Image 1: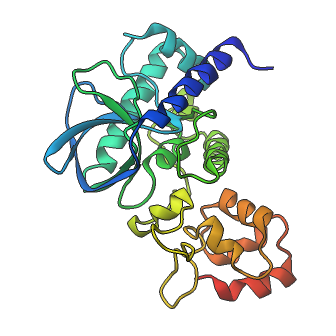
Image 2 (image 1 turned 60 degrees about the vertical axis):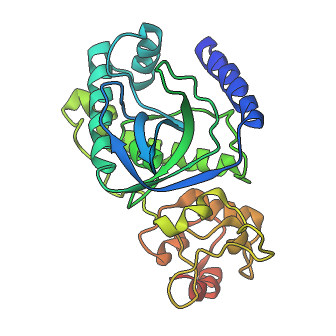
Length: 284
């Protein structure tokens, strides 16, 4: 049974999701720049995209507040991380620093301009942000600086939004086990980072949405050099093109990411040694 706060969040997110229908199609902004602003925090920040300024709010994650101006939200975040209010604000400041550092280099934003209901003079929009190494939301959760947030959200174009949600939950469990970031603040581990970081590349940004290329009858392959698939970026469709991989197994592979190498496929449920030997040549 959901608690009252959880139920309220789901209701809010259902309303937010409904607003997608009124938003435009997906847009990709490349070579974006982070704009310093006193209102920036870990999951919401000002961005220069081309000649225009935007405020973007990350999908699926929520970093703690950096001040007590929204006391109910801070109390909720404090309860989630099982820490004090002052510690919650510390996590929020660390998340803001983490995001600022990750966005020092040009990055990519994917948004459909779905209203995120900010409080500033500029409208705020939900978005996915890809750094030069990985998805920013995944990095924040993996390092214990954000909670997984927004189960009811289903961004258009993501055929299996729940796969990304489940991947984030796995990152969060690992962060809790390793006591990194906010999960280890009581032990002085706020600045500690996860042993294995999420990884991807700018070229895999479309694969994050599991989408077919526009106007193409073929499937997104996210191939590595030499024509083989990249085990960490291959789309759901590309995985199912491999003999022996169906819908369920493709989903398990995506949920188990990131892999250190294709050899880690051995640890995916449903891939025994014999199946691994047949699948291995397809990955690089």
